[in-house]
Image (cartoon, rainbow, N blue to C red; front, side, top):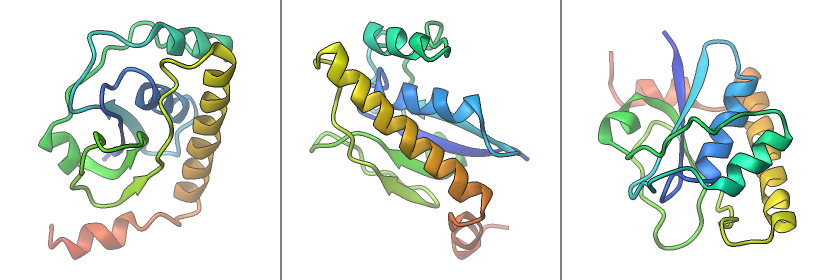
Amino acid sequence: MVRKVLFICVENSFRSQVAEAFFNANPPRGWIAVSAGPKPAEKVNPKAIQLMAERGIDISGNRPKKLTREMEAEAEIAVIVCSGSECPVVNAKHVENWGIEDPAEMSIEDARKVIDKIEARVKDLIERISRGEVPVEKARFSLGRL
């Protein structure tokens, strides 16, 4: 069984797409990331595509996806990467709120710094999952699921 991390931001066009790509570039064994948002944009932000290409990760074929209850239910971990009042409330087994500022309208240099921050947070999450420090098992059983 593959376990899922769900990265969420409002439009699923920048931060959550980047987080998903970083996670899936080097996931812990048996894990995969997906991303979505409650108000998906029409396309992934071109700046996100450019900045990830600089790091050797191609997200040009990605498309923003609508956040669904099924996605929430399937996720072992949900990470809200956005900040502000439009960020969704998520019902998942384990939820983290990273509160990362939106790089969409920033200069390329400032957006690059946000990408660095997302990469560091994703690497930390991967390490915590690998060490068993994310309480997904305990949370799953506390929900009374078989």
